[in-house]
Image (cartoon, rainbow, N blue to C red):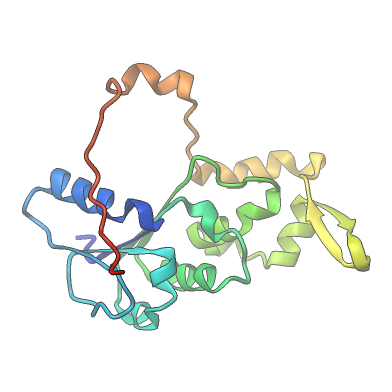
Length: 192
């Protein structure tokens, strides 16, 4: 059994996750959506939380989730950010992790590092080692070193590491998708 599950996602889709979990799992699971910092954490089968609320709930690290699902995982590309560290800690202690993103690296190969580390910590490369091995290192403004691009000679090795990622192109899956659907989305009114 993979419960309890933590779903970390942008705030705008928390209730979409709740609806979809309820739809696909029917009434067999309990779902808690964390809406604000004062919400107490429960022992629900699924806990859905936004990136913003995640950093406000430090106790969530101790909840022993068996699975973490990270929606829009490119939100955790900055390895020094609080949310990246929290998601990483939870992913490392969980039995499994699923990272979802249409764009896992928005600009540079180095942006993949934190996601690879969460999915496969056994690779054992530190941030700087990963950058020096797979990225082009340049001297940026102020003389500091920065990783940009991908080293062409290391692309085959990097591709072999990325076998944990599944990439689907729209043209390849469009025939399998249902026609466009219009869905009513719940929006919580903020108090004035």
